[in-house]
Image (cartoon, rainbow, N blue to C red; front, side, top):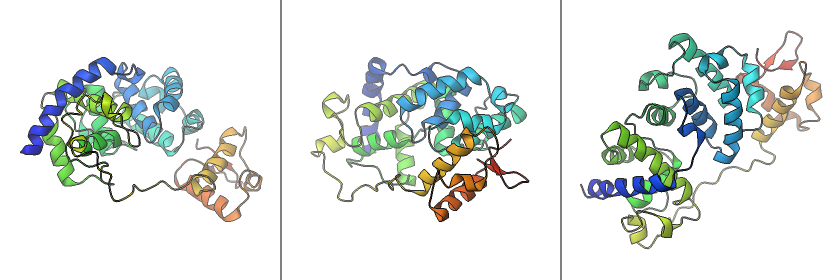
Length: 293
C-alpha cells in the first residue's frame, strides 16, 4: 500500500511537467498507422535518427494498404541504415495483415495487435495508448527506469520485467483512458529527457522530492549494467555490410561479389544464412541473392 500511495503522488506532477515540456514529435499528431510506424522505428533507435525516415515512410506509404501493395524489397530499401532491418520486414508483414484481415484499419484490440508480425507486449501497449488513447501499461526502458528510481529507490531497473513490477505499474497507472495515455507519454518523456540512464538531471525533475532514489542519496547499484556487445567486427555488422550490397544492387548479386563487403568467409556465410532465414534476402534459381519480391 505504501508503494501505491507513493506512486499516486507521482502522476499529477509528471503530467503537469509534460504539459510544459512535451516535444512536438510528428507521431503525436498523426493517424494510428503513423503511430505503428513510429513504434517499429523507435525500437532501440534514437528519435533524431527516426524523424527523417518516419517522414519519408509516411509520405510514401500514408496507410497500411499503401505499404501492403508494395513488395517487401521496397520496405527494406526504404529502411536504409536505420538498423535492425528485420523491423522493416515485420512492418511490411504487419501492413499486409492489417490490409487483409482488418479492412486496412489498425486494430485497437490488444489480442489483434499482438497477432501482428513484430508486435510484442510493449508495442501493443504503446499503440493502444498513443494511437487510441486507451488505458494501457506502457513499460519501455525509460518508463521502467523512472519507476525503479521513484518508487523502488533503485538506480536501475532489472534486466527483465517481473510479475511484481507489472503489478506495481498497474496499480500506479490512472484508470481513466485519457489520463492513462497521457501519463504513459509523460513518464516516458521524463525518462528520455531528465531521468536518463547515465546523467539524470534531478534538479529539473518534477518529482525529485517524491523520488525514493533521490531521498536515499541516489545509491549506485552494486551490480554493473550489462553492456551491449561491440558492433565493430560483429556478426551484426557483417549482416549490415552484406545487406547493404544486396540492397544497393540493380540486379541479383553473386555470393562471390560479397567478399569485398566482408572478407571473413565464415562470418560472411553466417550473415548470408541469417539474412535468408529472416526473409531479408532470397536466393534466385541461379543461386544469386536479391531482396524479397
